[in-house]
Length: 338
Picture 1 (cartoon, rainbow, N blue to C red):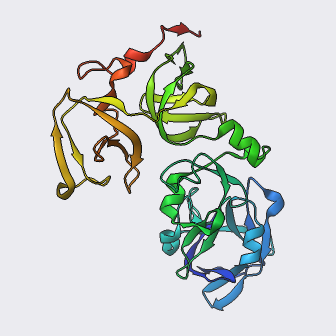
Picture 2 (cartoon, one colour):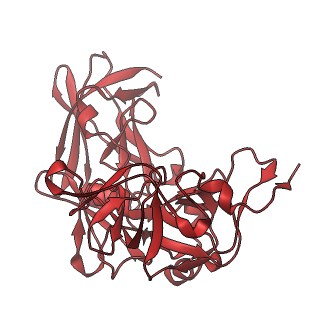
Picture 3 (tube, rainbow, N blue to C red):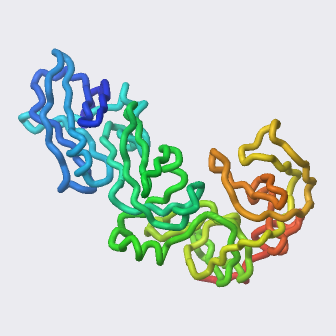
């Protein structure tokens, strides 16, 4: 489909305006905000002439809030039903997966964040939220940037929204907040397996299963092509099973697989460096934490921080030493699937 150039974006608490260049003889009949995944919520708006070579379209904040989540491409439609899409051009700086505009398909689209559903508060947030499904509302600050409001008025940044909260696929929308929390409530941390857990593999011919008693860290959540929930752990991605995980609250021993340092802060730098640990050194850690850039850190018994990267440290309870690979110590014997 032919493209015309996007020019300018204006945002305030009442409306969103988009300017675009227009060098076509026939004037546009209307602009349609069209979501290919939710055609029932398409929105038609007039195009207002700004000059001989530019037009503007606008959508009110109330209209924006009524849209379903997703990307709404801007179709410039002529009276003869010829359609044009708007190219990004100078609007590129406003684009991103969780910002007002999107260019995932190479063209301008208005992006509506799913702010009517529930999000899993997974990591690096106030403990009162962690492990729960909560409502998250998106608003704008005075600069037009997104900010996000949690229950009780707590506001977080776009970076915190992207990293600390887990948005579940639409296939989970049939569940209530209570049902989601009961079935899928979890948070980042250190866990012991009380049941076997299956490692996720793209091409499964042999099932790899982690033994009961295995200790691992859980740092993120993903979903496979079938929307099945996966946990990102220190031993790989595993298929989620809440009943298989026991939260570890007592100090647990790790071994340094390489030479590492401890630091007085979760954000590592030369200025906060504390101790040097040689490969093979063991030490106790009491919990999992995260840096400002969301890198996993272990908090040691003396209150300092070491890396939580499984390439550098491993749990000795899993049979790991500096010379033994972490994963192979904790696998159940192979089970052929095909």
